[in-house]
Length: 408
Image 1 (cartoon, rainbow, N blue to C red):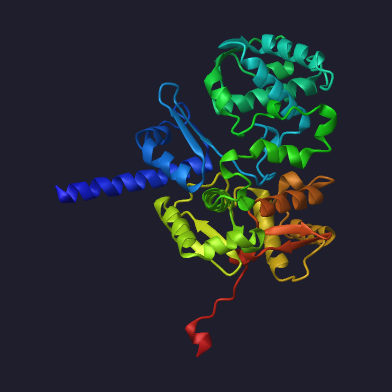
Image 2 (image 1 turned 45 degrees about the vertical axis):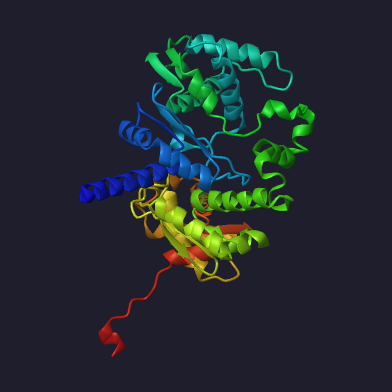
């Protein structure tokens, strides 16, 4: 019996670790699109939710009846490297118009559990026409219909919209297309994870541009921390220290010491802080690497990330890896013009590679996409007109291998 009990404990620990990493990679998991992952999280809901609450202060909601698990990630660090992306056009990031339509569509979907693509378009058109700040949605323009469909496809991928009949893509070619949707309004309400709703900030549209950083901070402010690091309560300050550090450690590719405050660095250097981080990493199935420059979590099974590097399936990632060789060896960094020259040489050297970047502005686009990929993994930064390699980039530098014969 003792042996069986031990095996059950080990199995639960493995399940909990895997469930944590699955949710870190995909904070919204549906029984329809990922049945095995959802079933694991449903079965181990208690310990997984407890880990997220204690370690990061994030709330996990599991709805077995509706078939989804939603991890509400909250952070004061605003990450621009993971925008909403179109389901086509090379996964291009959403522009401002698509984000605007996405918000208006989400508001109009709360009207009922069933709708059609045409009826919803009419409601969006009316809503934008009656709002003095928004540009009116014009279904006669193909570009507008494409933006509208991109927003719908994103909501379909989340499971908010379930296509009963037809295809959203048909609306791009004709605004008379017939598509019937079933709407999951409960899931729609779960998409917004900000502690403070945007409407509660009570800001006029004219003030938004001038108060943008302040408004973003207001959306993510959590009263349980008081004033965070400056709180007069030791309990609130310690809670903020644990959550603020672990949120970044478990949600970012690399955590650099220089980006932490003096008190955060002191917490990590303390016995309590080190034990909290080490135990949390072990519980989630990570290997914690600590270096002079910072911290990095390694997932041996590569479950906890939605993107991988190196990854030879993407041209931008390959180009980024090749550019790292040059960046790592250049202490003062390189200008974008120098990187363009390097990419030009790469394209000439490998004529059958990167065919989508062979156009007139191909070199510029490839440099831009490669740097975006490297920045997303915290491997480079662009400051003072130059691109600099960050410490973690040294992991991917080419090293000369010496054999024992050469050493003798």
